[in-house]
Each structure stands twice: as structure tokens, then as C-alpha cells.
Amino acid sequence: MSGENNKKYIVHPGGVIQGELRVPGDKSISHRSIMLGALAEGTTQVSGFLEGEDALATLAAFRAMGVEIIGPDKGKVTIHGVGMHGLKAPEAELYLGNSGTSMRLLSGLLAAQGFEVTLTGDKSLSGRPMKRVTDPLALMGADIETTDGKPPLKLKAGSQLEGINYELPMASAQVKSCLLLAGMYAEGKTTVTEPAPTRDHTERMLKGMGYPVDVNGSTVTIEGGHSLKACEIDVPADISSATFFMVAAAIAPGSDVTLKHVGINPTRIGVINILNLMGADIMLSNEEETGGEPVADIRVKYAPLKGIQIPEDQVPLAIDEFPALFIAAACAEGQTVLTGAEELRVKESDRIQVMADGLETLGIDAKPTEDGIVIQGGVIGSGEVDSHGDHRIAMSFAVAALQAGGSIQINDCANVATSFPGFVELALEAGLNIEVIDE
Image (cartoon, rainbow, N blue to C red; front, side, top):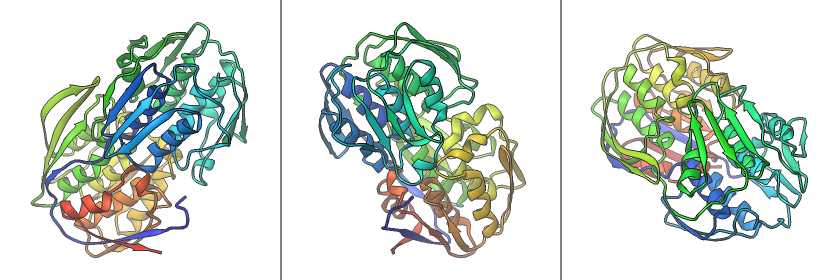
């Protein structure tokens, strides 16, 4: 959860979103730049690194395992790689804060090291399911103790991993990445097949650093025993963070905002596709590729939105963006229906239930279902909502105030810093009327 320094947001109604904004670097790519840079041969230079608490937890973990890392300084990080077998046993448990990505990916990467290591997290992370990674790792030969399938995770020393063929029971980039990282240390080939496309940053970065990965449709194969070569990594702006301002501009009349140098990886653009289906006015320009990742400037102008049935094939491509998209749905004309999104119930909070509760508090008809939600567009009122320490929910309700009838108070907002440091300052610059109360 949020630690002792609880924060509340009070966001006043009205406002127009305008200007050119650059949101922080992509969280997924920032995590992976540290992990793979640490295991590479040579020095990896990273620019655009996200200096949020989650990515910094990954950085601290590798420092604790003997990797020399300089920075971050204004998004620049220098990693002196130790090679595939150069990590050292940390002197204490590795504390990963609120970061599910750090824990799930590190469990794969550390499963075959020559030392024992324990991964711990905060109260929120300690309640999140880990069997989805520990079960397939056990099939590969890893020896991992959990606490009823949840953290802390104790990884025993010296497991000899064997490659496996694994069909993911759920679409999860974290589980896929965990097994690919473990596969680098396994005997033979590890093949992962996913039921629907998920973000492919791990595969792209492995290839960019010279590690052979075979991608064939929904199946990825990696062979143990190769090495990584250091390179330069330019981290694009995070589309998940850009989403809050995309939705803000889409719902507030008179808005016109351009978000610069945003990653538009095809496995991450569900939010653009869904907003387009709702009638949003979105234009991409300056499209280019940097370090194997496509980027573009995204311009969003206000346009009236309409409710839709969200296509299930877009759900994995927008899984982190749904809290903000629920706000778009609340401001749209008609009904929006989401199905096939049970994964949202095991994020930092049960995002379906928490968003439904908050929307109902604000006078919007939002009915949760087992695997989604039904939202009837309407008029957002004022009120007090609880983010349950979930950064994306806090930021989503802040955006809702643009169209609210009165002020919205959002409790438990300290965790916003985990993914989006500087959110309040950028929101003020863009046109939101937000104040922070420290308790």
C-alpha cells in the first residue's frame, strides 16, 4: 500500500487540456533495460529511464547483486554489465516495493543462479498471485518457496533448469517474460505460447542485444546458453502514462494536446484503438523506430464519445489503461461493455470493483461483472473516492474531475510516484485543477 506518507488529491471541476507534453519513460522498458543491461557484456547506456519507484526497485536489486550502475540522472543510466553469470548473492532480501513486474521477471532470471535469494514486497505486492510464475518455473526445475502462492518468494541456489514447452493459461507479458529470462539459463529450448498477444518488449530487447529469439505467431522460443551484448537504449514515453492525458483531452471540450515521443508498440496500442472506436479524434505523427521500439507523437482533440462493446482482442493490448478508459466510458453517450478482462481483478487492486465503486459514488451507473464491467454514460458528480493505493485508479479519477459537477477527493494517492513521478506538476501544466494534501 502507500506507506506512512498518505496523500489525497482534491481535483476541482472544469479545465481544458492543451499544449505539448512529454510523459515519463515507459515502465516496462525501463525495468528490462536494467535487467538485460546488467547481464550483458559491456556498458549499456540508457536514456529516458523512468525514475519511478517500481523501476528504481529493479535498479536497487541489481546494485545489491553487485552490478555497478551510475545514475539515474535526468533519465540517463549507465550499467556496467557483469555477463550472464556475474551476479553475486545479495547480503539481504531483495525488497521490490509495489512492483509486480520486478518480482515476476526476477523470479525467472534468478531461478538458476548459484545463490539463494528471497524476494519481498510491500503489503499490496505481498497479496498478489505468484503461482502463475512459480508453477511453470517448477516445471523447469526451479526450487522456489512461496507463502500460499504469494510473496515472499525464496529461490534456492543451484537449480539446473530444463527448457519446457508452456502454454500460458492467461495472456500475461510478465509470465511470458519470466519464462524467457529463465530460458536463457535452461538446458535446451524454452517455448512459450500465449492465448492472445501481449507486450513484446522482452523479445525486442533480447534481439536488440544480440540474444537469438524466435517469434512465430503466438509462440516464442529461446535457447539457453547465449550471451547479451551491451547497447544504447532510448526508452520511449510510456503510453500507459500518456493515456491519462489522451482521455482527458478526449472528454474535455476545447482540448487539444500533443504527447511527444510515445511508444506505440503494436502490443500496447489497445487504448488508441478503443478510443478511436468510441469516436475520439486522435492523430499520430513523427512515427519512427528507436531501439526496436516504434514511437510517435500522439495528438488528441476533443470529440464527443459514444459507448461501445469493447472488442475482446483489444483487452490484452490495453490491460493497464482500463481505469482511464472507464472514465472515457462514463463521459460517453450510451453504454460501454467490457468482457474478457478478469486479469484486471488481480492488479495492484481489483480494478474492476474499485473503479465501479468510485464511479457509482460519483453518480455513474457502473455494474461490475465477473470478467468486466458495464458502464452507462452519464453526468459525473462530486464526491470522495478511494484509490486503494492503486496509482492508475488515483490518476483516472483525477481526470474525471474535468467533467465533474463538483470537486472529487481521491484518497490514498502516494503510490502514483511508483509509475508516474511528476504527475501532479504535468497535470497542472496541462490544465487540470488539482491540489495535493499530505497527511
